Length: 215
Ligand code: UTP
Image (cartoon, rainbow, N blue to C red; front, side, top):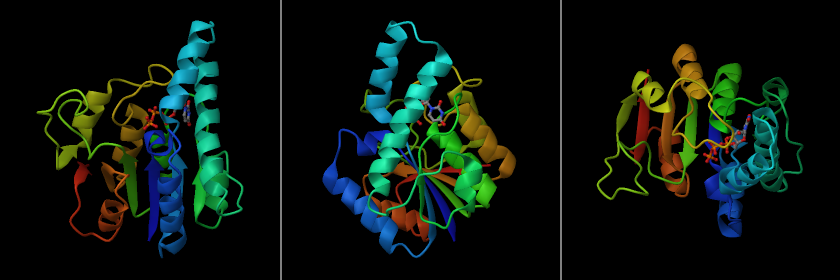
């Protein structure tokens, strides 16, 4: 099976050596063809916020974000002595496991993961984040937030708003990613990546805690 995993930057930074080692080991021992796209997380947003104060334009800010996602990819790729591709085309030609960060301005790494899943005809796209899935409201702010077991991609699109708004913006799954998932009919799941058992359960069709995106 081909599996693309969007690994949220929040899982990697602040640098968590134990977790990064576990992920590397998971990648090494997994029998499936894995493609991992690392996010930028809080550190990307901090750089973007400051550069925005300094007057940088949106494209430039996105490029700062991309640089951070690539640093995260390079860190994880150090275990594999492999270069990280910078484009979907290059990634699709490599032998898995493939680890990469962002590509071009105008979207998040979730969108990169969705585009890569479309390109390699992946069996599954997993969006791994630091909460258990998609909620009706922010679970970090509201204790009574309800986790969706399933959500229709159109509802997700509505939550994500029209398109790409600004660099570092923190939406659940950005609209570009939603559209790719919808058009290419990619089987997609959002779950908590800090629990690798959940990731494994999702890959092997077992019960898992998370949200399935209905197309
Ligand atoms: P992320 O994918 O980390 O964005 O990229 P995010 O929405 O903050 O995701 P989480 O929190 O890790 O899940 C960080 C920023 O880098 C730019 C965007 O500005 C994005 O907000 N970026 C990233 C791009 O412009 N293109 C890419 O391909 C990737």
